Length: 113
Length: 117
Image (cartoon, rainbow over all chains, first blue to last red; front, top):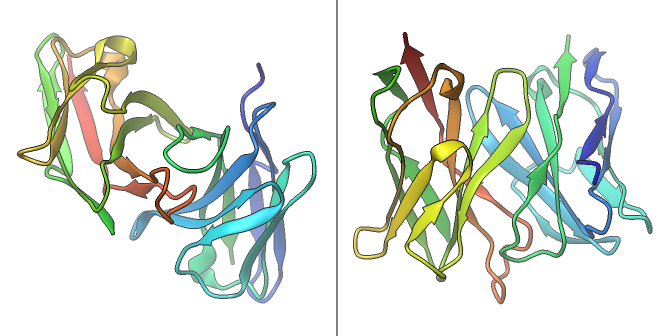
């Protein structure tokens, strides 16, 4: 079974731009969670989607948003990029939300200049 | 509310010696606990998971962890370190069925393991 895939793997943007990251979960998994990893803050939860519905959201500003499609693929969008948004963005999938093991993709590394 | 504390930010061992990575957790519910490993410029790989079936959990690559409720600890061990074990390790508390933290994993700050030849 193919693992979680994320595209693109690397991105360079400038302040003020917006960016969209994509995540394809493991086949059959319906829950997708997103995390931001930075050296200073570590790994922080952004949000989780299950059956196209956002079920949970972390403590991030409204510039961070996401969605999930009927095939469980998910996208996250960051508008009006700031330098501090430079990070590794990881997505993870699981069969269902709530205590399930999450399997991570390789991440998208975003650099904001 | 959930939280995780990894007691050492860096651990250095010699190849062939035991590894101990320490983790304490706090959870309002009976927790799901995980250890993940991250090699440089890679995503996170699951090492093992505690689900209350057994307090001693065996994972991949010879790692195991023991759940101690009285100490709220979930330390990761390996009898003999290998050079390929050098990486960053994360202790993680998971969401629980019936709770409201859907899909949310709470990560410790990570422990960087260095293995010397």
